[in-house]
Length: 386
Image (tube, rainbow, N blue to C red; front, side, top):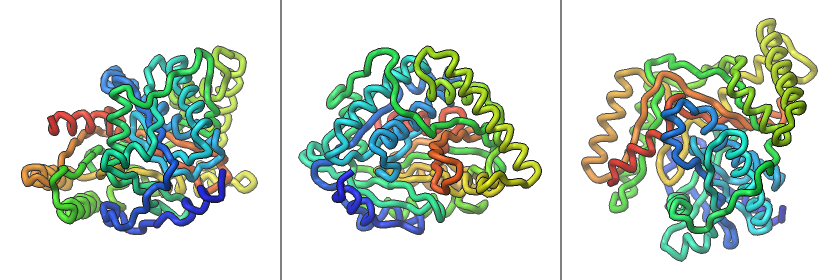
């Protein structure tokens, strides 16, 4: 990667208080020549209604993994959307990103029998249409920061992709990207306070930016009534389990298409790793530099359960009373012309991960609702806008 890219990434502002994510003055515009890699599952609603939540989430996280691996840059700005993702691509990575998107579509089709659409949208086109792509980072923990996006450009790029503009065609069957580190080993995470709720709120086009900022701060405060900002993952980390569907998808992702021997080898390796971690955790042990208890705590602290992507997105664990106040606040804001919003309630959350190595501290964990999450919330948002 070029020094220009590294300079930009190093200069990105870091937001310490999540309540400030709607402050546009804290963001920097992407440099000229960059593009947005955009992808999502076609008919994710239908896939979710069929119970394929893990596959949908795995595909969305896989887009990030494929691009990060081919470019060798895990710190590129990206956002996980549940059924898809957006990744900011520097000029010297465009060809590699295009190939990764093409291969990711083939992988999703071959391994999951789902359709993944993808596009590479130049930031110059976004700006020519009166919008922008501005980026900051939010510090989720000592070791993990996640990109936040403002300016409307991500939403515009996604809409153009769905119209069939700037699209990337899928590679031939059997093609697959480098998905090293992509995993789905965690059991569903049950609510501790009452409900897991996925929330999306975007500003009304004519809304006062100050009013929307106040709304975001209010919702964040309400989600924090039960502590930890509504974090759906326990402080000591989630339960590591033998989740057949997740382990199977991970094994296939790490194997050549149709290579049953490699898939079996990876399956046994994954099962062995899960078993070892569970034993180490049960007895409070370590293996070399790996400490299971510390790792699980880092999983919780490194999770992206809330973000800003041209609007507020959260998957939080809240009490019934807190949820009622959040609903009332969002409804009033919508009635006042401040926002559009969509919500979806469920009793558990799901987590998909990118872990380059268990010995590093910057492993990334993406949380969504376990039975619809952001995809269902987004469909309700669109219905409200219509």
